[in-house]
View 1 (cartoon, rainbow, N blue to C red):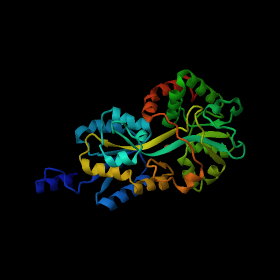
View 2 (cartoon, rainbow, N blue to C red):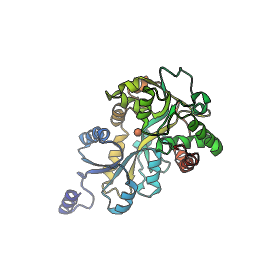
View 3 (cartoon, rainbow, N blue to C red):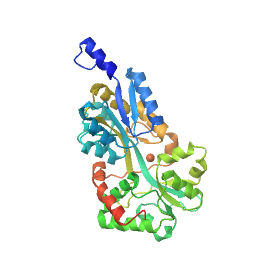
View 4 (spheres, rainbow, N blue to C red):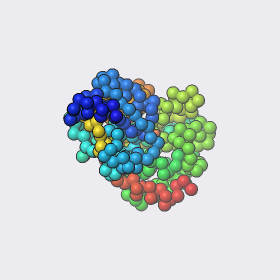
Length: 333
Ligand code: FE
């Protein structure tokens, strides 16, 4: 920033110079972001600085206000994208490239956020102890035959809140509460650990089915310590009885301050390009949003599915009510 401003002053430039960097705040992992950043810099000559955050992005952007150095926000989960928009720290991007590459249901109507990948939240089932076809819907999780056989991470984790929010959009509050109680009644143990820990529990014989995001299968297979866990389960693309398989997104937004606006828009457009979408597909086993770019061979080997058709905006709006229901039934208790 300092270098840029000094040079701009020296040159008497009124606009930012062409060699401005793009600054990114990211909730996504460095290993994922690096190949994307390298690809963009190679293509454009524009450097990208990434600050990785674990939490507090909204607070930080609010505190920095107009003087924020950040141009671009990268995160997972529709709830986090909507939270940023609601906090007023983003701005719309009007871009023909993005409108062409990203299907309308995977970007905000007002262009305040754009999904870059999708991931499904599915059932992982023991190959040994769960027959093919024994479970096909999220509703099936309440069947008494699964009593003491289900493992999951905390009900209040954003991934499970989003799933419950989708259930709520489909079925309303009473049925959602019943469903949460039914799933809780079938748990083998109190919710704990992450999605991969549940698959480890299946492998260890502590439970037979779990909830997890699809890309964790790829992560487990890539980790020698976890390959056995992955090989003990198969992915079941569970659906809602009156819908499809629950999906969430990772996505991007432009900050309200965006000091390097034009370069930042270029970067966002790059993330939707075929090259970047292919990096996402291969590096993190997620589904590209651009229908023209295929999922990786590994991901395709898990099978195909029909994504649930509720709008992400409706899903995000139902989140706080879903969380209340999860707390009401004391899901983690
Ligand atoms: Fe995750």
